[in-house]
Image (cartoon, one colour):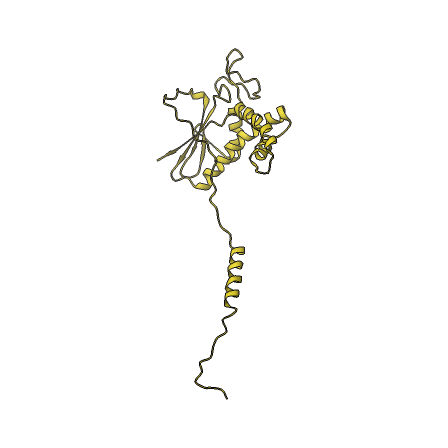
Length: 203
């Protein structure tokens, strides 16, 4: 005979299994966002003040608060920035008697523009009101200009793209022996077109 005073019990034996399955479901379906940044190497500490840079060896780029892009005080489209930067870096304006003469440069060799890639400095000045998307787009074009020139020289010297060599060198799956072979080649290409990019913010 059933005891009417007995409190009904809930079978909670499978609750732990259900909670565990839900935990696995959320772990599998949840995406974790990671912050992306720009790879930059900070300059070494130099106790001596830097020597003044001739104006012709500086490519001034300004992003104003409205997102407009000015190169050498002239407004340009973002699509033209890479071409203008390559022309400046690859100019090779130093004369053949000058020790800075660039024998691998293919530019116009205008004496009023940069003397050599090692002397050329790209100066990027942004405004506090500049949108992050615009700033990153400009950065991508500037780094792309350097990579295009480095790829050209890597193809000429090693029959391989610089970006492919760098990717293989940074990959953890690449054997150590291959990395040792790539390291001096990458360094040589970087020395041909060093990344001289100066960044500042204007109030």
